[in-house]
Image (tube, rainbow, N blue to C red; front, side, top):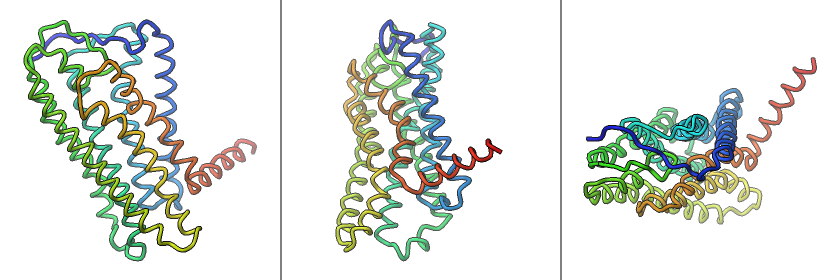
Length: 303
């Protein structure tokens, strides 16, 4: 079993101040943006729909996802202390991977909801009941934390005899497997298989849903109807593409490349930061509510 400490290598070498500033601004923007979406969906009756409920759940997940790694990194940078305990390292890895798998399945649930709404417009309210909506929102969390447990336990069972220097800014499977003194073959196979099941399979299903959505929308006669149908899906499609591309590169073949940490920055910090802007600026309903809320606050301040 593991004991002792693991020393994180810096993400950008000796440029500590630049790294700290970039991650701090990214984290603040991500949290504020996602909190804004959650609040808007909560207070605005016109956004009390299934689609926006899933978007608000996704925003909660994004805040948790980025909070697993970035605050710890900021603390390390400001204190110039890159040490983390083995227990803390594996706890961080488990929660991070669990939330990542949860995001994969939540994105799948969100496109399933849009497919159901477009394909069964008249029966959608009867099918997507409140109970089913809650179940679909909870299921990805259960699957995420359950499916991530086995590869974490197997990796934790490896022998580590030093040097324990991780070339990454958080604890992840590939960097830890590369440090193992014992053969990490089983751990690598388990991780790669899990990635194919939890990342590639949901992506294939999502692509299948979108192909069917395009076929359905192409049959709509009016341009206005086509534009309205596509507008509910484009934001989700952009978010899904950004997340899955980097995740597949890193996890489907986890060989511990030097560039993994830069790709990891994309899906752990950058993507969660821009997601609220994608949903806001590409969604007329959210833009309208946001504009009205800002105007209301301005009027209150001027009184």
